[in-house]
Length: 84
Image 1 (tube, rainbow, N blue to C red):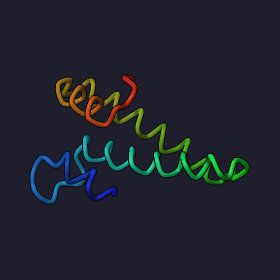
Image 2: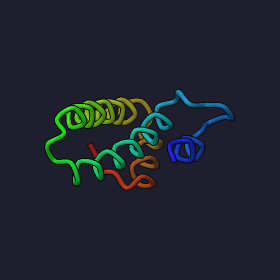
Image 3: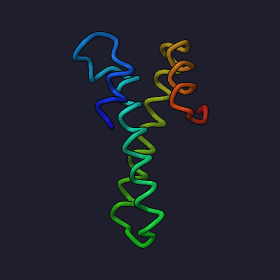
Image 4: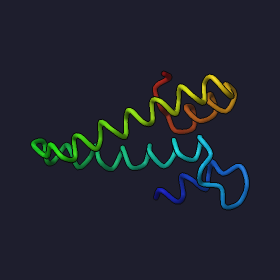
């Protein structure tokens, strides 16, 4: 699923490092970890990892908003994310 999300946001073939690709990959991982956390509420290690991913995604979104606002808009609308 992460690969599909990254492929949707690739600027060129083989691109995995651009900011939209990273945000899309993190979005899929975060979604999977959130469903895990609903079952296993006391899993503090996974909770810490989830918080780290959310922080990284927020920072990447702020960077993208500052550098390329049109791509930021496209990314948050297609991934259905809350604007930062």
